[in-house]
Image (tube, rainbow, N blue to C red; front, side, top):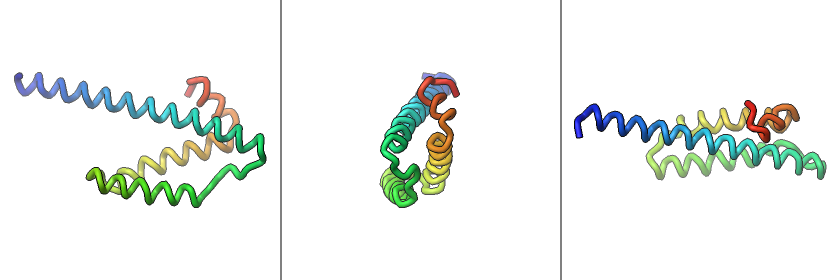
Length: 102
């Protein structure tokens, strides 16, 4: 296989991985929407800072095990948490999370 062919294969693998990441984000948003409905129905607190801190620690440990920089994991997690908080606070955002419109 030529270097350019090999590069094309690697780029396709990156594209597949990126699409998988987007799929995981969509799945996570749907779960957050379901959690929001449960919390609203049972008058539970919408946000849990202690849980977020626990997630940060656990994901940094997993990142270290896999050789992924903490800063990368924490940056992605922060973006995900910002989105999750928005979903929890804004019912219109939840509708778009469950309908696939974003």
